[in-house]
Length: 267
View 1 (spheres, rainbow, N blue to C red):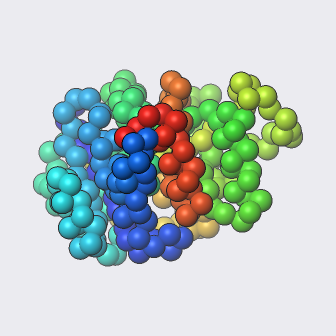
View 2: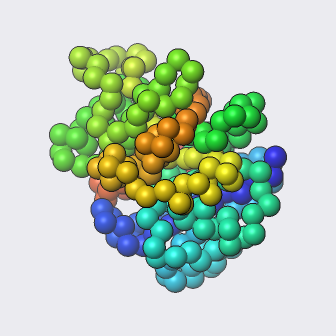
């Protein structure tokens, strides 16, 4: 299946302005921008996908082109990454079987997360959208709870049914577990939603025509527009394989991600 990977990048983030250009030091001490590290993560996906950065900002465009990325300029009216992916897809003239939204704040996304999404959409021809979920370990769950205690909007959690279709996504920690004493090596019932989406073109085309719903507006989660329209979102459980994962949502996440890059020996 022909694959387009779009990395949406917006400079005017409400929570963290200029976030795509924030520099992160790797294991060698070399600093690379968030958008560059996300682009490098996309380059590791098998199947020879086409990878583009989609932005409405000339500073991001200039920076991305400087390290070799292909850039598609999109409208300032795009309200989220899915709308930006839809516009980029149209600008490129379509012609791809699947479109992946690899959000520009997730530089630690392993390639097998994306590859698994593609496989599952191929094996589930009626599914229109797929997104990965990662079972949280005790440390990740503690990180979610710390963010909420401190009033920070951090990672997203997901709950899904027996058929693996999503029931809900939230910035709150769901489901309620009733305990906080999980051992370091103990599986928790909480799933971390990884900010990657794979869409069929028909789903992208429909999404852009729908107005934002109340749940999407309240949570600030673009995928809830699909759920509010009763479009099933397939949750694909992925394995960390020893890798750590965290998105850059707040300035406080920079040292956390840099520590992970160092521990994983990522340059």
